[in-house]
Length: 370
Image (cartoon, rainbow, N blue to C red; front, side):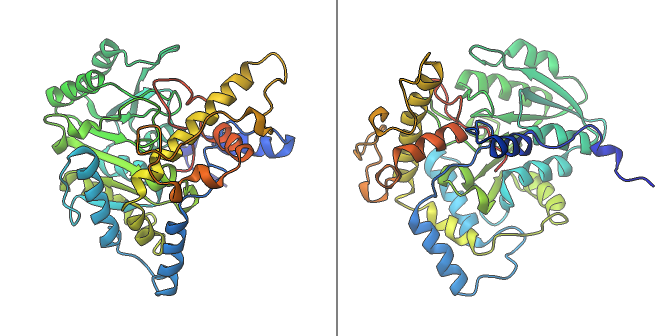
């Protein structure tokens, strides 16, 4: 009896499940799985409760509820100056992982080549194998993990169809510079390629500006941008993601997605739409500041030769958010996660969520929960 398909041969169990099980069994600090120990904004949780009580418990539209699609469109305009039509150029997905899967299933044929930055989120490899694509890795190497542009150019061939981009990058934490993104854009335009851009850590960078590649000249019409609420708002279990881009690319994604989950998270979707109103900017800014402080302490702790820095001790707590409306403060003490979260919890959150995000040029976290 045949018990599995060849398309999943060699994939095994995701490393995140293995590491989480090992951490639970040994009582270790889990540096692998990317979920925080703290919940997101309470007003968003309240919005879910309200949506449930208002009867929003049945199937949502396949493209996503209108208010979330509109919120995503406003987000792209507000943060990046990108104009997308919420009716035809935004689709809501079951997390960013489904968006990646549906994009590759909808855009890649067997034998097509896909250029991807290595190391990578493990679902990339799995989905490329399932689609029958040929993976062309371009390696970001330590210690700086910068994009080797010459190697990127060499990886593109007449059979290349897609560049699968990830910035801010998981797991290195690198945030691609505008010049690096321009090199990717130049290749995409020259070879008429589609770019699928995974940007789930767009609001979790430490001192580095995230630039969406769709904002570069000639790229909006050939880029499918993917993001989610899991990281930005610490709601990884809700699995609410989205993709935005030209109608043709979004339609290809939906063409595959409609036969996967079709739809999910009916009461969560309007709540996330509400999350993208003020004071969301304040909350995201403060959450990033809090994580940055925590990871700085963890970095010192892990490099210490003794137990001089105790992650359980409040005395080792570094400066945190001052609630000022600056790049290092949230501007809103009432909605600041740092006001309600104890230092030991933030230490656990930082080691769980962002073990290498203490690098000054980066900040996203490795995670299976997209």
